[in-house]
Amino acid sequence: MAQQASSSSSSSSFISKYKYDVFLSFRGADTRFRFTGNLYSALSQRGIFTFIDDEALRKGEEIAPSLGRAIKESRISIIVFSKNYASSTFCLDELVQILECKTKQNMWIFPVFYEIDPSDVRQKNGSYKEEFANHEGGRFKDDIQKLQKWRNALHQAANLSGSHFKIGLVTSLNRLFHCIQHHLSLASYSKLAKSSQASFHTP
Image (tube, rainbow, N blue to C red; front, side, top):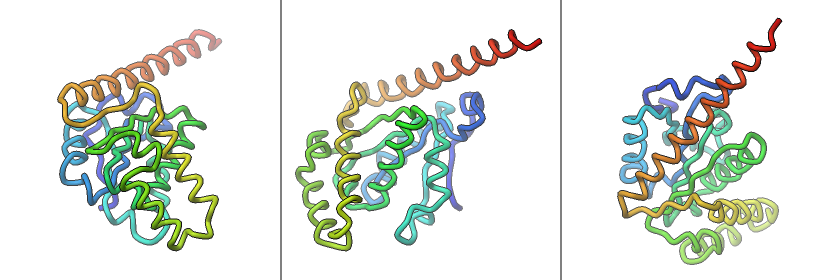
Protein backbone atom coordinates (compact mmCIF):
# COMPACT_ATOMS: atom_id res chain seq x y z
CA MET A 1 0.00 0.00 0.00
CA ALA A 2 1.49 3.30 -1.06
CA GLN A 3 -0.84 5.59 0.82
CA GLN A 4 -3.99 5.86 2.86
CA ALA A 5 -6.74 8.43 2.70
CA SER A 6 -9.97 8.92 4.58
CA SER A 7 -13.39 8.38 3.04
CA SER A 8 -14.09 11.25 0.67
CA SER A 9 -16.72 13.86 1.33
CA SER A 10 -17.98 16.53 -1.03
CA SER A 11 -15.38 18.91 0.44
CA SER A 12 -12.57 17.19 -1.46
CA SER A 13 -14.08 17.67 -4.89
CA PHE A 14 -14.78 21.37 -5.17
CA ILE A 15 -11.42 22.27 -6.78
CA SER A 16 -10.02 19.79 -9.25
CA LYS A 17 -6.33 20.46 -8.63
CA TYR A 18 -6.65 19.37 -4.98
CA LYS A 19 -6.89 15.66 -4.33
CA TYR A 20 -6.82 15.89 -0.51
CA ASP A 21 -8.27 18.21 2.08
CA VAL A 22 -5.43 17.60 4.54
CA PHE A 23 -1.83 16.37 4.41
CA LEU A 24 -0.37 15.08 7.68
CA SER A 25 3.35 15.65 8.31
CA PHE A 26 4.67 13.80 11.36
CA ARG A 27 7.49 11.70 12.81
CA GLY A 28 6.18 8.17 12.54
CA ALA A 29 8.20 6.72 15.39
CA ASP A 30 6.83 9.37 17.75
CA THR A 31 3.16 9.63 16.90
CA ARG A 32 1.98 7.28 14.11
CA PHE A 33 0.28 4.80 16.45
CA ARG A 34 -0.75 7.38 19.02
CA PHE A 35 -1.72 10.98 18.40
CA THR A 36 -1.40 11.14 14.60
CA GLY A 37 -3.25 7.85 14.09
CA ASN A 38 -6.07 9.07 16.31
CA LEU A 39 -6.10 12.44 14.54
CA TYR A 40 -6.35 10.73 11.15
CA SER A 41 -9.29 8.64 12.37
CA ALA A 42 -11.04 11.71 13.78
CA LEU A 43 -10.61 13.62 10.51
CA SER A 44 -11.93 10.62 8.58
CA GLN A 45 -15.01 10.42 10.79
CA ARG A 46 -15.71 14.08 9.98
CA GLY A 47 -15.53 13.37 6.25
CA ILE A 48 -12.26 15.26 5.78
CA PHE A 49 -10.24 13.61 3.00
CA THR A 50 -6.77 13.17 4.51
CA PHE A 51 -3.42 11.91 3.26
CA ILE A 52 -1.27 9.89 5.67
CA ASP A 53 1.84 8.21 4.30
CA ASP A 54 3.20 4.77 5.07
CA GLU A 55 6.82 3.79 5.59
CA ALA A 56 7.13 2.50 2.00
CA LEU A 57 7.26 6.10 0.80
CA ARG A 58 10.26 6.88 3.01
CA LYS A 59 12.84 4.46 1.65
CA GLY A 60 16.10 5.91 0.35
CA GLU A 61 17.36 9.42 0.94
CA GLU A 62 14.85 11.47 -1.06
CA ILE A 63 11.14 12.09 -0.71
CA ALA A 64 9.29 9.83 -3.15
CA PRO A 65 7.65 11.72 -6.05
CA SER A 66 4.25 10.43 -4.93
CA LEU A 67 4.74 12.02 -1.52
CA GLY A 68 5.75 15.33 -3.07
CA ARG A 69 2.65 15.24 -5.27
CA ALA A 70 0.44 14.53 -2.27
CA ILE A 71 1.74 17.68 -0.56
CA LYS A 72 1.02 19.81 -3.64
CA GLU A 73 -2.42 18.24 -4.06
CA SER A 74 -3.49 19.05 -0.49
CA ARG A 75 -5.34 22.18 0.51
CA ILE A 76 -4.25 22.10 4.18
CA SER A 77 -1.21 20.70 5.98
CA ILE A 78 -1.16 19.71 9.64
CA ILE A 79 2.41 19.51 10.93
CA VAL A 80 2.73 17.44 14.10
CA PHE A 81 5.89 18.66 15.77
CA SER A 82 7.13 16.08 18.27
CA LYS A 83 10.36 15.49 20.19
CA ASN A 84 12.14 13.68 17.35
CA TYR A 85 10.59 15.45 14.35
CA ALA A 86 13.88 17.20 13.50
CA SER A 87 15.80 13.91 13.61
CA SER A 88 14.09 12.92 10.36
CA THR A 89 15.49 14.48 7.19
CA PHE A 90 12.30 13.33 5.47
CA CYS A 91 10.20 15.40 7.87
CA LEU A 92 12.44 18.42 7.39
CA ASP A 93 12.30 18.12 3.59
CA GLU A 94 8.52 17.70 3.80
CA LEU A 95 8.33 20.85 5.88
CA VAL A 96 10.31 22.83 3.30
CA GLN A 97 7.96 21.64 0.54
CA ILE A 98 4.89 22.45 2.60
CA LEU A 99 6.07 26.01 3.19
CA GLU A 100 6.85 26.37 -0.51
CA CYS A 101 3.22 25.40 -1.18
CA LYS A 102 2.10 28.03 1.31
CA THR A 103 3.94 30.65 -0.75
CA LYS A 104 3.04 29.37 -4.21
CA GLN A 105 -0.54 28.13 -3.76
CA ASN A 106 -1.68 29.66 -0.50
CA MET A 107 -1.76 26.37 1.40
CA TRP A 108 -3.16 26.65 4.91
CA ILE A 109 -0.83 25.28 7.60
CA PHE A 110 -1.70 24.25 11.15
CA PRO A 111 1.23 23.36 13.43
CA VAL A 112 0.49 20.99 16.30
CA PHE A 113 2.98 20.75 19.17
CA TYR A 114 2.86 17.27 20.61
CA GLU A 115 4.53 17.12 24.04
CA ILE A 116 6.93 19.89 23.02
CA ASP A 117 7.06 23.65 23.45
CA PRO A 118 6.76 25.84 20.33
CA SER A 119 9.86 27.77 21.41
CA ASP A 120 11.95 24.60 21.13
CA VAL A 121 10.95 24.33 17.47
CA ARG A 122 11.33 28.04 16.77
CA GLN A 123 14.70 28.48 18.49
CA LYS A 124 16.05 24.96 17.98
CA ASN A 125 16.30 24.19 21.70
CA GLY A 126 16.27 20.86 23.52
CA SER A 127 16.01 17.84 21.23
CA TYR A 128 15.88 20.12 18.18
CA LYS A 129 19.25 21.59 19.09
CA GLU A 130 20.68 18.09 19.54
CA GLU A 131 19.34 16.84 16.22
CA PHE A 132 20.69 19.82 14.31
CA ALA A 133 24.07 19.24 15.90
CA ASN A 134 23.89 15.67 14.57
CA HIS A 135 22.98 16.88 11.08
CA GLU A 136 25.74 19.50 11.12
CA GLY A 137 28.32 16.95 12.23
CA GLY A 138 27.08 14.20 9.93
CA ARG A 139 26.55 13.86 6.20
CA PHE A 140 25.07 17.36 5.89
CA LYS A 141 28.07 19.15 7.40
CA ASP A 142 29.03 20.55 3.98
CA ASP A 143 25.47 21.27 2.84
CA ILE A 144 25.05 24.64 4.50
CA GLN A 145 22.20 25.63 2.18
CA LYS A 146 20.05 22.62 3.10
CA LEU A 147 20.69 23.09 6.81
CA GLN A 148 19.66 26.74 6.57
CA LYS A 149 16.49 25.82 4.65
CA TRP A 150 15.55 23.45 7.46
CA ARG A 151 16.23 26.07 10.14
CA ASN A 152 14.21 28.69 8.29
CA ALA A 153 11.33 26.29 7.74
CA LEU A 154 11.12 25.33 11.41
CA HIS A 155 11.25 28.97 12.49
CA GLN A 156 8.60 30.01 9.97
CA ALA A 157 6.22 27.15 10.80
CA ALA A 158 6.52 27.66 14.56
CA ASN A 159 5.84 31.37 14.08
CA LEU A 160 2.59 31.02 12.15
CA SER A 161 0.16 33.36 13.83
CA GLY A 162 -3.04 31.98 15.31
CA SER A 163 -2.33 28.34 14.48
CA HIS A 164 -0.66 26.93 17.58
CA PHE A 165 -2.34 23.82 18.96
CA LYS A 166 -0.92 22.32 22.12
CA ILE A 167 -2.04 18.79 22.83
CA GLY A 168 -3.55 17.94 26.17
CA LEU A 169 -6.87 19.73 26.08
CA VAL A 170 -9.93 18.55 24.17
CA THR A 171 -10.68 22.19 23.37
CA SER A 172 -7.43 22.43 21.40
CA LEU A 173 -8.43 19.57 19.11
CA ASN A 174 -11.96 20.90 18.75
CA ARG A 175 -10.50 24.24 17.72
CA LEU A 176 -8.29 22.49 15.17
CA PHE A 177 -11.28 20.66 13.64
CA HIS A 178 -13.30 23.86 13.60
CA CYS A 179 -10.52 25.78 11.79
CA ILE A 180 -10.09 23.04 9.18
CA GLN A 181 -13.80 22.81 8.48
CA HIS A 182 -14.05 26.60 8.36
CA HIS A 183 -11.25 26.89 5.79
CA LEU A 184 -12.71 24.10 3.67
CA SER A 185 -16.10 25.82 3.75
CA LEU A 186 -14.53 29.12 2.68
CA ALA A 187 -12.72 27.40 -0.18
CA SER A 188 -15.93 25.69 -1.28
CA TYR A 189 -17.82 28.99 -1.23
CA SER A 190 -15.05 30.69 -3.23
CA LYS A 191 -15.14 27.94 -5.86
CA LEU A 192 -18.91 28.16 -6.20
CA ALA A 193 -18.75 31.95 -6.47
CA LYS A 194 -16.15 31.80 -9.26
CA SER A 195 -18.18 29.15 -11.06
CA SER A 196 -21.30 31.30 -10.84
CA GLN A 197 -19.45 34.35 -12.18
CA ALA A 198 -18.08 32.34 -15.10
CA SER A 199 -21.56 31.06 -15.93
CA PHE A 200 -23.02 34.55 -15.71
CA HIS A 201 -20.51 35.97 -18.19
CA THR A 202 -20.80 33.07 -20.64
CA PRO A 203 -22.63 34.23 -23.83
